[in-house]
Image 1: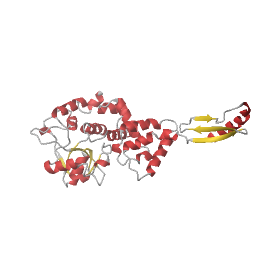
Image 2 (image 1 turned 180 degrees about the vertical axis):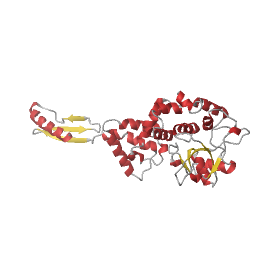
Image 3 (image 1 turned 90 degrees about the vertical axis):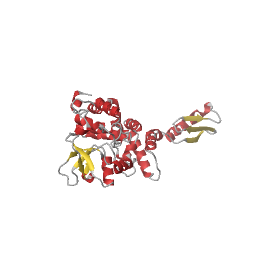
Image 4 (image 1 turned 30 degrees about the horizontal axis):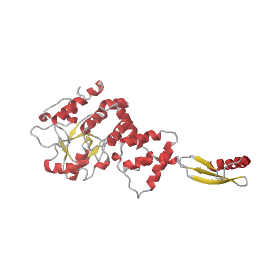
Length: 327
């Protein structure tokens, strides 16, 4: 990590934070009660050092409905349902909210007072149970907020690779990070990994393709990356988008995201297949030529009665017809 990234957190880098969190056994935004409360990864980053729980800042309890997501949040809307937040709803009902969300104060919006850098599932659970939402307020800028969000959610198994990829792409589009290398350095990913994730996420900017996925978080990064490479081939984009349009018209067919991408990835090969063809041509007065073409374009000629020297002129005429027929 660069010295610039380290300065974000008072000299404590991501590997230091991750190591401390792993030693403490941190693994969930809602921790089980313990004699000595443990610190969330992002909280360590906020302070730039390990600190006793008693030194934590004051926590505010606010109306969850007055909190909106930070626009670069890495969870998609598909998460905010009773089913997908059931674990937090049950925990909140039983033990209360044990870890606060991280928020920034906003002004000028009549509908909201805070934006959540992380903690949107906690917000949903609080609203669902008609509870107050505990938040910690920070004045972190967008760059620091992006890293804090990544640290908080780095080990969350429920956040998919595509959700992270889409979040990274939105941050790059907003110039939160000046380069892909700066983003990779800040979040502790390899440069190649970031480049791959960004290319995969770019595929979902294609409107026709994006419409094929009700839940973009479920789109496999690996297949989306392969599709991104395919779209760059000459003439491929039009074929793939036409295939996507064809799939959209078949609304009664349910396909998994992986199956959709598999269809799109094979669309170029399918477009290059030719209609099988078998035709017969007369050669002179009694000769005959059979021409067959397979889906791959291979053309074969057969002469059931053989060929004679006297068939030369008739063969030339027949071949001319074949060339016109085959295009």
